[in-house]
Image (cartoon, rainbow, N blue to C red; front, side):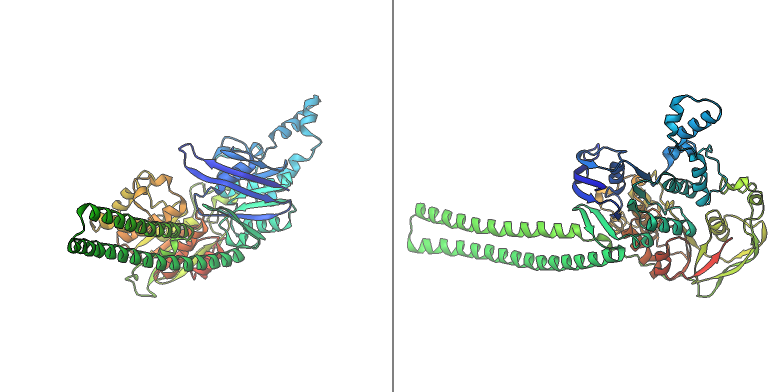
Length: 544
């Protein structure tokens, strides 16, 4: 066995239960994807498996030689690349020995790993980090560079188990392909948290974390989706049956109450006619009421049981199935030229798009090796392709008019656009959910209507005062669309900059459906092949 999880629970400091009583065994060499909605505890569970975090209860047996690539790298900013890779102590010992210090502790630290520096540099080079020194601080490197540094560590350390938390978030197409190949080739145990459906389809097993615990599926992502669809269909049928049973139970309960009322009236009249003494009438009445009360209690218990069963079924069904954003059609006629670029190029004063790029002589020249000439028309759907640092976000800013070309001409017609980036910065972190919604209430809707729209986007009363900074990526995405609906602001163009990076799969399906059904212009930067295909984005501009 590689990992054994026994009765594992984690409870936050505020007593909120994140997950409880988890059980799972992972065999050596298994390759498994860990899925689940944002906030269900996937990253926390992975940190517990690594040993970075202690569970509230339960035990974890783990292999000795494991390697972990986290989702976020801020904690490494004060370290050098060598320190982040966990080899600085060996490098110090190696350099001391080569400088003539033959102290035994240096040899013990190095442990015969004489080519550690060469292997580290080779691993970095293989991930496109040519020439970057191991002494370089992590701070200031881009997300893509930090990710590739940690992925290079997989080959450097050759572990028996690899745990990856959203490893493709900042990778370009070449980096993703390299990661896919590495995972296919390795004999190590692999556990991956990812929303990258291309990667998920290459893993032979899925483990879903939900409020019901861990559920294992012995198939790839497509198999998992089919199984989930079958389960949800069965649950929907169960829910319909329970709803029918509840309606019937309530009808019977009403009929019982009506009969009881009629019987009470008739019984009292008959008793008076028959001249039954009052004391006997009272006893008979009490007996009848007790009998009716028991019958009512039985029906009440039945309806309450059905309601509880329905609540359990509803909690297992995805709420997002009911979520649909219907944007109005753009007021622009299809085919109108919105952007016309002729021989466009751009350069920053020092081209500080990436700290690494400033070391290359060509970095101070134009951003693109060939100037750009293209037209963008109303109704077009296109993606911007290129390696990390190729200027994709810069071109978006040129299209939006936030930057102006340093060479060539870019003409822009009058159009409205909404820019959605991977952080969903349309949402202000310092606002509460309700304040964010009210900030877009340009139509002065009554407060109850704003709250109704919030509920429609799965923001119930208990989260209205929650700070937006504490929302997950999926919640920020939903709130962004909610704000646009409150403002009745259908843009002529959606500009999407890696919109699926911080979303769970359920949230990706929401934004996919929204953009697919939107009738206006779409420009996207995305390495998510499935998202581009499912939203009908086929045309591309390649940046080199």
